[in-house]
Amino acid sequence: MSANKPNPLHDTIVVLADLFPACFSVLQQRRKPLKVGIRDDVLAALNGAITAKEAGFALKIYTSNSGYLKACKAGAPRVGLGGEITGHVTAEEAANAKQRLAQRRAKQARRQQTTKPTKQTTKPAKPALSPSAPRRVGLADLRAAAQARRIAGVS
Image (cartoon, rainbow, N blue to C red):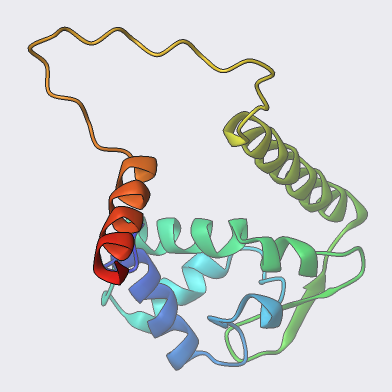
């Protein structure tokens, strides 16, 4: 989403980080693996302030973040709402996080390759303009006009 548009899911993550700073962080590099089943703990702690659906979506975004996935290494501690260690990331969970990061990087690389302008060895043919169509002024035309004004002002 654009920085100008409000994002209620991001706002939920900000609230969670404010209420439970030992567990949640807005900054990617500070994110820690969360306790398995933390959604239920969040819902119980917030006592109806957010719906289960809102909590689920916010946690999905939080745990899909690259910073979170990088923190999910085998043996890394999982934290509860108070920051207490409630378990550890398994080798399978770490492999899953690593795979998701690799897929994301591959997708970004494909996207960059498709958006890169390709070098053309020949110039494309300009479309023929009809005699009645006005000619568009290009950068070269503007530069030529500026040069002509400079010369006319100097002489």
